[in-house]
Amino acid sequence: MARVSGRARAAAVGVIVACFAVGAAAQPCTVTLSQTEGPYYLNLNLVRRDIKETRPGLPIGLIYQVRSATTCQPVPGAVVDVWHTDAAGTYSGIPGQGTGGQTWLRGTQVADANGIVLFDTIFPGWYPGRTTHIHLKVKINTQAVLTTQYYFPDWLPDLVYLNFDPYRARGARTVTNAQDSLWRPSLDMLVVPPYAGAIVYIP
Image 1 (spheres, rainbow, N blue to C red):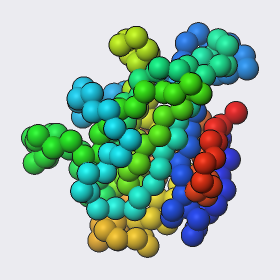
Image 2 (cartoon, helix red, strand yellow):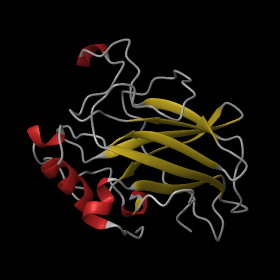
Image 3 (tube, rainbow, N blue to C red):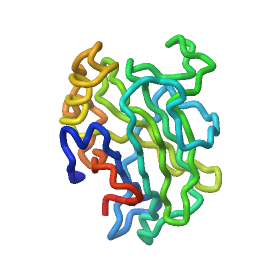
């Protein structure tokens, strides 16, 4: 399970960090678990770091590093798609949710020389049946090599949903990590204070 630091006040403005390895399983790196894409992926190719648009919510930064599971080295040029719900637990671009044609909280970044991608977004909301999560898809040479979901340590959604607007209006989530059949401890993200310029990853 990833380390957690910062807690409470620092976490509210923290940076969420994760690392995933793609390719054949080999030590010292372990292939990140694949998870379902879900019904709300849209292949929009929106290359941008800031995916908030006008959605209200608690700002957070996401830092992901893509590494080869064979060599444990960064994978420059890997394309990472991210998508998640807004504070009300709704996805953009879904006509059935009344958001058709909208693109907020979706984006794509190309990994730099260190395999790093960064996104500026808001803390996701919850919806019935699932714990709080963020979807990711990794592509190399246009081919999808990993689709997965990342999660937050339980204390963080509890802190955000009960103490910050606009989340407080909906109250606590109804499903914790352990109650979500998809959640796995290895997919919990590391939470660190926002040290400017720092690149942090899960070794």
